[in-house]
Length: 207
Image (cartoon, rainbow, N blue to C red; front, side):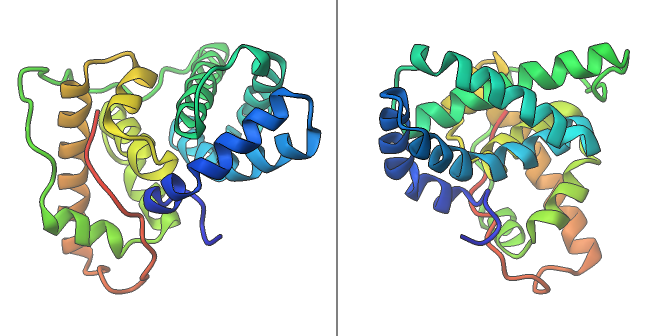
């Protein structure tokens, strides 16, 4: 199982996740627990990037809503990942509002810069990074970049799914993830940590 949150592994489990969700919708509680175990690590990583140490509390609120609305969900495993990420994000933003704390402000991304995906150097940097280390670094990015990287890399969503969660155009999400990953790669290079933790964080690019 490893660290939960590596996209290749996440996507590889989407078939299992879809099957569990379908059984859970038929009232199978054990299947709901399976879906929870598959989705929770990525969701927690994403929420840590948004609300820090309150991530567990916000995740609990999100799961109550997910359980309540499960009958309304239509889609496959990848779709479920996106749907649950959207719910988690709304709960996180409500949480920040209640605390009268703004999510970290972000410089406005220019939608026009539809850059291609990151190239191998960023991929290699990410491959070499542990999830914890990634979350520490990601927390220093502007919020739009941080969320894009978290949804792509930690939750394991593809580009269009990440864009739907964030309510943005895929191009804008791709740009933000590209910039975030580029910044992370630069930082990693500066720290010289690239071969310290051989844990795949996997893929790249978005928001």
